[in-house]
Length: 368
Image (cartoon, rainbow, N blue to C red; front, side, top):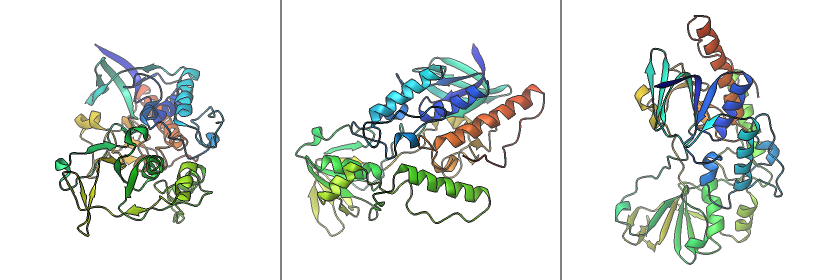
């Protein structure tokens, strides 16, 4: 038996909730399918000490501002609490835990197959994020290394690493923040592809979002975008990283050449014994459920017009990063794509109910 509904949103994290908010405002019948056991999305899997790098008022989903934090930047637990209260505040219809196995085409719409049945939807929003797809680069000899390897997605706190020789691999914010924390209790070496880029102390997530918005507006209007001063991948000097700078530990080495049984070999032939490697090397979009649609391009992601999949006009992708919306993987940045997605779905459903062909993707995008 198929459960029929206008829209299925896959994923109950920040992108799914933001989209649900606008679908609710448009009076569209929808359901959110979330594979987590409780609210919070990817934030449930971050390390214990993680904080946002923008204030609460600049880290909010549409409709309801995140309560002010006792700290300058909200903690992971405060974000999880906010997301839980957000879905309760707007009575968002979420079914969990539900694992979506596939999305496939039929003449009447898209069939969403899960471990708890099937839904037939006129439109689907994929908002599964990236956290379940950690990326670890290939390195010669990695399979020979007998030490421990974990991705930042698995890291929780520094205590379990006390006294050990640890490599932190990756030059982004996660690498800098984890290095800052573990360097207090172990001998940590930071490995980055290039010299890390540290933003000025007065630049935080608010400033980065404003710059991303300026760039997005320029591209939308056909103007040359301003040259960015820092991007979302550069290192924000949050208090723990500033403290690590005071201790003079924010020094990075260029990549090693290979692993061996008990460590790594550097390009000068030197060897370092290593107990643990923490890979802070990012994530890839979690899109396995879309494989039956066969819409991935050469970059491994669907081609989109805004958030709408070009090769499947009944599918939208929200919150995965720059390829489907400027700053869309951030709490505040996801609002723009979520709002446009709901507007386009309303057009699609309206056209279908009048017996017209599905609306083409909108050429213009609304302002923030």
